Figure 1 (tube, helix red, strand yellow):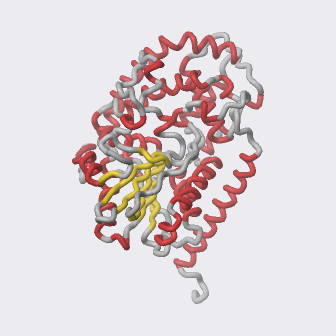
Figure 2: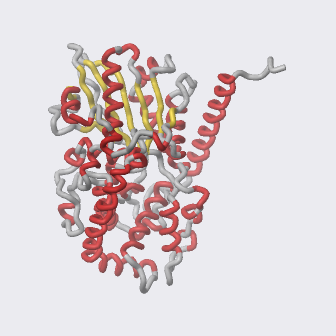
Figure 3: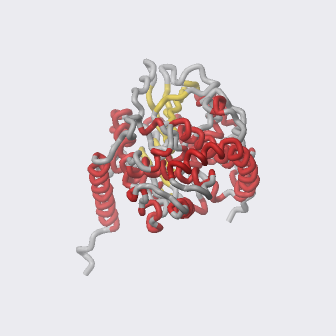
Length: 447
């Protein structure tokens, strides 16, 4: 009686086709939606003139990547991504509601966006997030065209991994649907949250959670200094623009700044809350944010921050070693996590030394002229869809080399003479982070 029932494999295939059709429909709808929205601010400046911290929309590269030297053969690619643009969290929504309710607030009615306080959309991947991931995937196909076509012939040679959160999982599925439209590869591997030492590592590290309390306290002290220095001027400027005569705090202004980021990242709308900020003011507000981020996740916090990505890099180096042992069967992996995933990666690699000339701890009293040159900027390290790629090559003498790419742009570690760098340099830099005992570092008792 069950002779005509579809097999499990056939049902799985149909589910994947349906999921791909849903993603495609969302993308087509979002392309129409965003093509009708403004892409420049009222003054004609590009949206990217505003530094919007972790709510910065992804900026596609405007230049091509340098080709590999003659004799170099690409063996493997591995990437780690933050999810695409998402809706506010419940915590963010509470702050936004507080701003909406400010006494005397006088702004155009269409500035009050109900979608930013819709609890049903709590931290979900937004339409523009699908679009970001689609664009990145399309450029990935172009960048690795011949390599990926060859790899995709075997379902084992290209893999996709995500954290358990919807925004990361759907980012991975969207990316996979574009890179592998014929569904050769296996479904996205989703790492259970209570076991995820790779992409959502903070959730399984009690010691980091404990250190976070001290880091947050230290950050709050520095933010208080920042507010005492910059607060009077910020409140005076914003009060006049908003019609709020009293009760406006720097925390409210920080929420306005966050709302500007969401309006641009989710709706391509620079002509609402973003009109309150110019590039200098947005950079100042990012500095305030980075006081906290650089301590909680970054290089100016507890030492454990420099260890949090050790399990991820252990997995990456293990996959590199497997590829070098068996090049024809090398596996390329695309992993999709969170902003803190990338910040922990950046901290382990000391990317602040690559991205800026000023690397002293970010303080509330830091001169703005100095802060402009800091290497830790969340708008650069952790915008929506931020990504770090590691390309593995062998040269004509069969020696392994690697190249790092941050947001599709090649970067060079200080230890490297060129962006194509000996793999031994990376091994040395990572040191005992490779093969680390994550449970011991986090003092987590195995289940």
